Every structure is written in structure tokens, then in C-alpha cells.
Length: 120
Image (cartoon, rainbow, N blue to C red; front, side, top):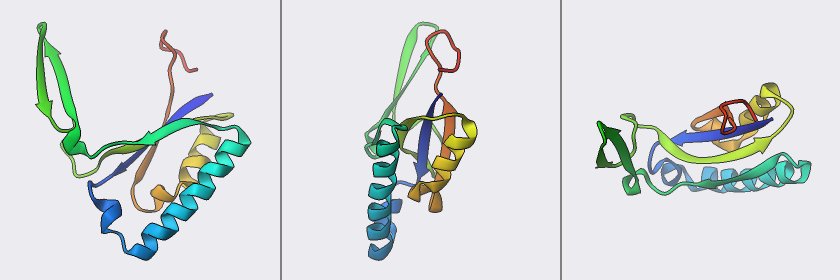
């Protein structure tokens, strides 16, 4: 079963951490993703650019309205994601709970759907 793990943080939050915390998080994240890669559960993922670089598109009555910035009206924005392939939601939740980002920000686990709308 594939799950997308979404990481939410405030823009600039990582940079605002003390240097010691940033170094710990980078080292721990490298070890975390190495373990997931070796287990075969890591499918892929990436950090995202700053929310100020995003655009939101909404089409209403055939007319596209494009606005600068992220879609959410909140302090925390989607900062990155990765996809894992594991046995079930319990394992996906366990993995997300071990992600170093979960110690500072919200980490969401969501099943990936196929094109027909069924869980993959």
C-alpha cells in the first residue's frame, strides 16, 4: 500500500532553529531515509520551494483565477512530501512518527489513490 507523507511547517521555521537542532535534524533525517531506502519502503519525495514561489489556480465557470501563494490560509504550509510503500496505515503512521520533522511540525499520512479512486 502506498502512502504520501506530507510535512507542514512555517516558512523559515527550519532556518529559525538553533544550529545544533538543524544539524541534528539533518543527520537524523539522512539516517531515517537511508533506513527507509534500504527496507524498500521509500518510493520518492522532495522538499518544496518556499510558499511565496507557489500559485493557486481555481477554475470557476470555465475561467481560471490564478493567485500568488499557497492555497491554505494558515501559518503552516506544505513544505515537502515523500511516498512510502508499506504494509498498512499502522506502519505508515509509525514511519511518519519517526520522521525528524514530526518533532517540530505536523506530518500527515494519506493513502495514495489510483486513477479510478481506489487505494493503490
